[in-house]
Image 1 (cartoon, rainbow, N blue to C red):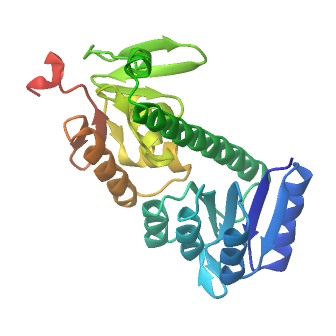
Image 2 (image 1 turned 180 degrees about the horizontal axis):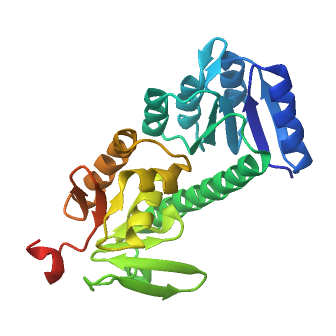
Length: 274
């Protein structure tokens, strides 16, 4: 069965080009030329990914993104724009966009991001399914089953950062924060840590260089793939940083004023008094 993709694009030539590229790659594609039409299709059918232009008749890409995020299971959304607008990019990031690409977009780049988005969505759905199963298990009030689930949950009290070898996935441990290569495998204080793909990318970039400062521009380039000024990069990162600090505490994510951020183990003697 082919993976369903929705393309929302009001320029006929661009829309047909996107449809041709995606269909040639084996996807099932629906094309919408207005925002209301895209929203209607999202309500009628489950899509794995929505690729939408920012400027659309009858609305815009942010409207489509917001509606898509309310669906269950929700598709990942990739927004395309022919102009660079910082306020629009920030709005998209706040609403949970998977990626934000500028037009004209290289077909190979778009296909790569769609493939990443599909894997992210599948992982999110697997995680949500696992959570529902765990809830059902605990609702049985079976001491034996509870003990089995408890035994299966890894507990790591090591406060030093190091690589943890696990089958098929590299993990980085920094204090009570454990990151896998996929955002849905993160844990904090031995509990599941729910990160958006952007939040995970931010932490993963910093975790690869624990204790080292990464400049704002470098982080944005690593996360989003485009170059902006230092001031713009700081604004783009602000929402991600605030959300991450709310989830793991401010002590882990340190801001070096006018420079960038670093990820530290606040329990390490090296940083405790820094």
